[in-house]
Image 1 (tube, rainbow, N blue to C red):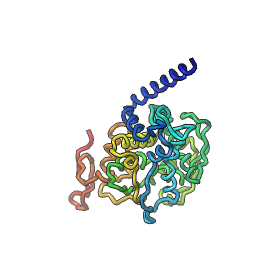
Image 2 (image 1 turned 45 degrees about the horizontal axis):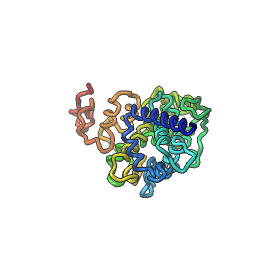
Image 3 (image 1 turned 120 degrees about the horizontal axis):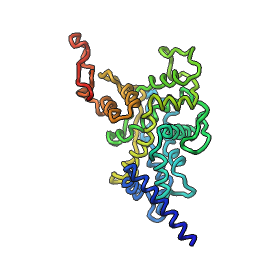
Image 4 (image 1 turned 60 degrees about the horizontal axis):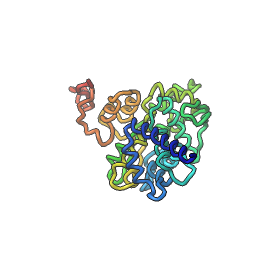
Length: 336
């Protein structure tokens, strides 16, 4: 009787989770990914395999010329393990089908934007702690909508934004990379300054027009930072969902297994490449983060590396030449 009741309970939970996964459109991808990752004997995914699914693969040392913050490679290296530890909870050495579904729903299920921001902050805090530099941020409970206290420093945000960029662009990078990807980071200084001026409690002595971003040490109350993301760049909250979904889908459609779901990184460049467009990649990303419609992706596509060929006809203004006759602009049709 007890065994029968237990079986019915498990079946009911599995049905509910599969229904939720179906509502996201990801159930077929999840089934294929689980089939590829799971051990046929234990019918569960080994933790190391699941961690590898969400990790970054550094095949070569990152060049010194990349101007990258010293701790950034450590952050990326610990992202996969942090995702599994936070969302795919198990007391065994593997994750079964129900735990796999449950973890995916925690990452990608339908939820308010404020909850997505909380999840993003929790992931960043956990990853930073694993990398050896814990944040001064606390969460009152494990609930996705719990209150957050403490503060982020401007240095924390300096690395938080590039992490979000890489997660949001993981799918595109996997498509464009041929064996190895060189990640060119957009200039996010303007986003950082926006966060500082909006969240810092005392910015009277800070000259935002003449300051060293890398040397800035400003405390941003966690609640204010949460509200800044929610009100100013709400689409940023979806970058983690995009990342998890992209990795699962990539694994599901690849002919092989884990090797094709990883993003092999050969180099990371923190100096944005010169652009002949007035709309640089950094500005385009910042604009796209403020938009909630499909135009968000279209704005970013005009400037993303690998897409910008200089002939995009959807730009209202496009930098073409220094000819005084053209006054360095040419009018293009605007978005309809």
